[in-house]
Structures are given as structure tokens and as C-alpha cells.
Amino acid sequence: MSGFAPTLAHETANDDKGNGNIVAAMKKSPIMLVIFLALLASGAGGYFFWQFSPQPGADQKPPGEKKLLSEQTRSWPLAFPLVDGYLLPAVGSYDLPPLQPAPDGLLLDPQGDIQHLHAVLDGRVSLVSFVYLLCGDTNGCPLATSILYELYHTSAKIPALSDHLQLITVSFDPGRDTPEVLQSFFYPLSSDPRRHDKIPWSIFTSPSEKEMRSLTNGFGQVVDRRPDSDVIQHLLRMYLIDRQGRVRNIYGLGMIDPALIMSDVVTLIMEDQEIAQEESAAKADTNKADTNKIETNKARAPSDRIQMSFPSAG
Image (tube, rainbow, N blue to C red; front, side):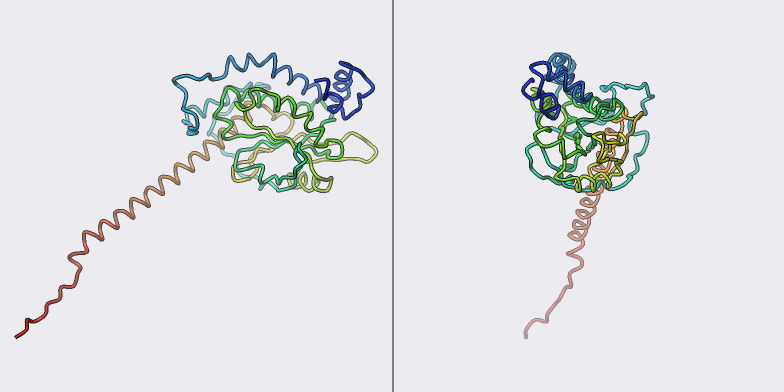
């Protein structure tokens, strides 16, 4: 861990030694404290998540089977803590009208490769968040990151969730949050031995300030960067995007709660299942109608033939 702590602090703690690097990094940025606690959660807390996660057994679905029963799906939000004591709405009891199409934009991943956001969305329900890693506002990026870690780790209890939901975090500080810095931020995730049992979480920056402004403006994410300050003023926002690439909900301070977010996620999953069932039923009805028409035509064909007779010769 000490090997990447200076990078986490954007090389601001290079003059310290050993554990001092880590302490200095966390003092300079609360979001680094969140990352440090996440490392502990993935280690010391690993037993807890293993203990309460579904274990292989006779009642589990065979590998590769992705079909979910609605009863199972409805119970998913109950696995997540309701942090602020809200009354959790019943899954599927409300609608989430589309708010806007999710804009596309160029992203830079931790390996330095450029990707398009629409390709990253990849037909999944996605929770997109914007942060910067030196954020010191405890009600800003560190709060968002802690909620994302809560969603990520708790998802180990529901392995099937990874077929439907992904987390996407984008830094709007490409000058300081370089791909190398993202690799350090990503370490608690890439080193998690149970990451394949949890929902995917991808982290990006942008190739340039211009590309990032285009993306944040498209989402309506307010970012105010002043040249005379290292602090970036912004509004805390998370965007829930459906499989069709439409923004279905926007979460701000006071609404970013794991159980509430999961209730919305499951509502979208159930909506997709209902649409798929309706399309399947409509296709079955069409096929049945076509089959009946063919059978009717076959039954009528002999009587519809024109009988022709010819006089015999002589």
C-alpha cells in the first residue's frame, strides 16, 4: 500500500516516509481516507461479506442461467442499508420517466485507452457519478465514493445483480487525475479477490478539459473551476441510466442512499422484464396467427381448385 500512497496524494506527500505518506495523503484529501477504509473493508471486512453472501448449494441456479424471478428481484433493495432512514418505496410501485438521453463523450481509462461513454454503457443499467480525487468537501466526492463502495461491496450478496447493473465514475479533473492516478484509485477494486462476484465498477478521466466540459454540460453536471484555486466547485450528482441510454433519475445531496438507489435500479430491471415478456407474448401471438392462417389455407385448398374436364376423343 505504501507503494501507491504518494500517487494517491498526487505526489504531495513525497517528502514523508513510510506510513507518513499515507497519513499525509489522507489529511490532504478526505476521499483518500475513504479509499483507505475501502482497503480495510476488502480485507478485514471480507469475512463479513462472505458470511452473508449466497454460497454454492443445491438451491442455486446453475452457472450461466441469468433469468431472474420477480420475487427475487423485488427483495434486492432490502440487502442494502437505508442510511438516512427514508421510508423505502415498494419496488415497481412508481414510474421513472425518461429525463433526457445520456450524452456521449470521450473517456480515458486507467490504461490510457480512449473509449466512448455510449460504448461503456453497453446496454446495462448504469450509475454514473462525477468526482475529482482531491475533493475535500465531506458532503461531496468523499460521500459519493463511500456510497459507491457500499453498493459495490454489498452487491456480493446478490451475484445476479452484476448481469444488470454497473458503476461508472468519471473524474472532471483530467489535469491532475491522470490514468496513473486512476490506477492507484482503482487499486482497492482491482485487488479485491471477490470483485468477480460484485457489480462492475469502471473509473475514467478525460483526454482534455474541453472533452470533459462537453460531457459535464451534456449531463447538466455543474462544475466551476477557477484558475486561481485548486478547489473545484461542483454540485454532487449521480445519474441513473437505463439500458436504452436514457437518464431516469438524478440523485443529489440528501437523496444518495444505497437502498433508495437500488429500489430505482430494480424498478428499471422489472420494467425491462415486463417489456421483454410483452414482446415475447406478442411474438407468440403473431406466430400462432400465422400458423392458423397457413393451416386454414391448407384445409381450403382442395375445394378451391378449378375442376377442368375435357371431352373424350371420338
